Length: 168
Image (cartoon, rainbow, N blue to C red; front, side):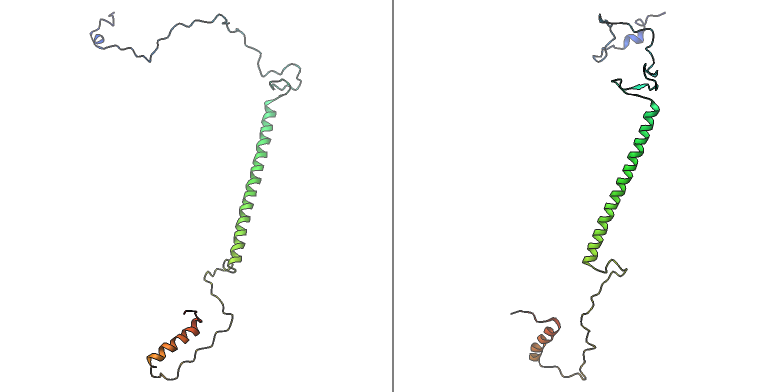
C-alpha cells in the first residue's frame, strides 16, 4: 500500500480551498428534542367515533364529515353545472353578435336599398321623366357659322345641357 501523498503525480497537483464548499459539521440537538414514537397514530381513514355514516373526511371543526365518493359526486355535479352555464353564455354571446350583424345589415339596407338583396352590384339610377326619343339631327350640313356666333351660341347649348351656372 502506497500513501497517496507519496505518489509523484499527486504531489504535482496544487490543492485549493473553495470558499463556497463547506464541510459538514456535527449538529447539536436542542434540549427539547423528543424521539419519534415507535407506533403509528390511528389511520385517518377510520370512521370517527360517534359517526354512524362512516364518513372519514372531517372538517377542521369536526362538525361536518363526508366520504370521498360524496365529494367526487358533488364535484361532478359542479362540473356539469359550470359546463351548462358556459354553453348558455356562449350561446348568448353568439346571439348578441348575430343581432349586431343584423342591425348593421339593416342600416346598410336603409342607406343603400336593394344593394345587398340582389347579386347585381352595379346600380344604375332610373329616370323620373321619360327620355326624349331622339335629338333631331340637321338635314344637311350647313356652312360653319362665323366665329363670333360660335362664341355666343356655344354658351346657350352648354346652359341647356348642364344648367345655368352663376358665374359673373
